Image (cartoon, rainbow, N blue to C red):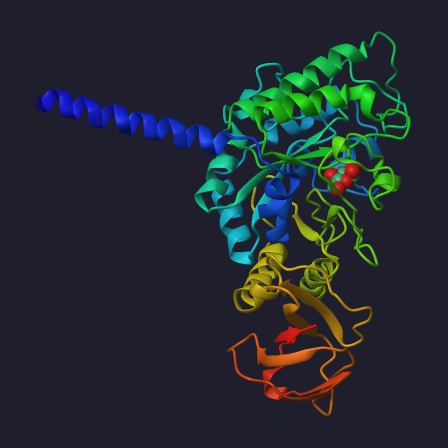
Length: 454
Ligand code: GLC
């Protein structure tokens, strides 16, 4: 009898585990359901790191002045064998680099991290069975595994940036509007073989690390879009294995043109658009978008680039993106061993301090409902019909302390988000006058939360 009871309990338990497991794996019911966490996240950390980080912005003692140090092989026309010969012996990631990244991202208030699993130079950070040009082969470590585990531990969503350009693969097509290494030709190349390889590597990435939350493709050309990568098939395969995965549209879009507008975009090409280094003046209506941006002038590490954006600029970029309904993916370019540059750490921590207090005005907010906000930016959270919580991010603190909001809104309550203390205000039909206390100034952005009817 007792044995029977134990067996029944065990079976019920097993059944429960099985159903909750399949529940978690169910296909999202809608695009909205799939995108929910991403839309709420608003802030992510981008990481560009690979062999190029070792070059650190110079080759043979010559500083690379071309855009993006992850492109150094291209800018300096370095033959693949030479690039590998010089950099391989120096590749030695420190233990725990991934934990440091994940902790910093968390501290900054990021909700997701996107790492270059393979950049244009073709070097894979994961354990690839179809390539020798991988971290596993060079240093016996699966760096993607380390990364994914570290992010999950901090409760962060995990993204992988994967390049379709590949300067290393002997069959990758050169030309077609894509940048290729000078002197390399298409002779003897069979692009199909490369595409096969690309599909296989992507399959490894989505099969061996559990749920991958984002696949961040980079990048196609006008001439070669879509079919050159069997992109429709590739996306279908990815979605089948990972129905919740969120992907950008760069397999189809040329970043220069397709990266900034919704023209020609549909969901068969990916879930969102990725303007690079700029926040679209009025957002991109009706689509999900994410601006990615560097903290200095390069994605991959350079020891020569000290042109850091100020924390004020970074925080205001984040606010700006949120106020236009988009996400902000802020890049760090770790040093050769994986150490994030001190200047980046400092800024991320400072952003984190601001987010600790003001995060409510960023996460899960929607775009500014007003036309013009001369004093700063505005985000909102709808709270039922006609009711909303407005977040006014005041940049230019009025000298006399008087802030006029000329909109037809009825304010029920106004507080400083920091400390939740009341803001004194008066109102009539078309105007709200807030009397601000200069002791409450936040040097990056003072946030006022207004519960209103509108
Ligand atoms: C571009 C560049 C690249 C960088 C990326 C980030 O496509 O090629 O180096 O990784 O954009 O958006």
